[in-house]
Image (tube, rainbow, N blue to C red; front, side, top):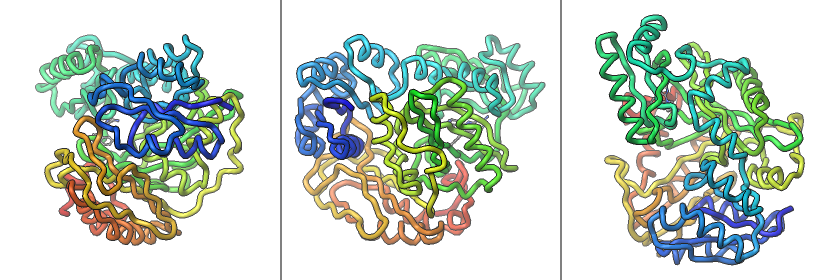
Length: 445
Ligand code: MV4
């Protein structure tokens, strides 16, 4: 096992990682910016080091500061959490070159999955179902239009360097193709410094279902079921649940098998998520693979009882997975609501000081947060301040528990998305499991 782990993150995920370290008996080092001097992760880690000014680029993204901190504190591994440097292949190589273990996949796996066109080609070759479309990148509008005619409109143009919804354009007609194609390329070039795009059929009213996998260095790959993340707004997930109300047992078996094949075909190691889009008929297609521990991982932990972060650290240390597929059993239904310091109507950030903080509690209710009364929510970072996760015997009970849990929470000083969640949970559509990515645009709250 590692001697000491540097936690290259902040907020609730930093605390989550520190807890895993503590249970594994591994000391942890917190890093913080000048905006985070009163943050809880500093209190909970065994040591802490200030790494720079508030701006993320000067602190949590400051790769040399992180490597020097690991060196002076004698840490032998770095956990990046999610966001920041979690999917930065160059940083993985920098860690490697100074003898530090990056707790995550290899630089090559991050690069492969970061290139969405290449990832799709690789998955096609492995026999994983993908949305019908171009074989890799589309070089010209002419080529794209010819292909769009073949597959039929509407189509979608996606940035190969994109993902998570950035640099995508839906095109409904032949007449609109050429200018939309050029606009998508220009947008991708400006956003990612890479204007390569690919084209595929547009799936109407899609649902987002993803499979959690974890793989060790000995070729063992285990799936931990799926999460439904269809309730989103502007490609930001709001609420996640497991199992997905969108798929039946047959589809679940196929999808989890496919996810394992996807990971195995590229020799993936560490925790990862294989993201699928599910259409109206329940057919599913590979979208992308996320090569990090995700915000919504507690949903999976609740239904499986498996500590994903501890497993992720174990496999990074070269230990085998402590579980086989037969050991993984699923119990009940879990829901997570993301509580952001945001105006729930306008979705604009609401930084400030949290004056009152009363978390939810009670049976089968988990709150992952770094918030407390008196804590500040700086404007420099993501506005996630708490995740409320509940486990019920079935979906109906989980909904009741979540409404009860959110009803207990009192957060004052900043606006939060709690009222929005309460409205979503009350709708007949959500209660019937009719969750689509367009939910918030189409359902009256
Ligand atoms: C699509 C699609 C329809 N057809 N691909 C958005 C995020 C990225 N991971 C994939 N996305 C989409 N890809 C085809 N061929 C619709 C979306 C999409 C979406 C997907 C998942 C969750 C929310 C979404 C919101 C809008 C569009």
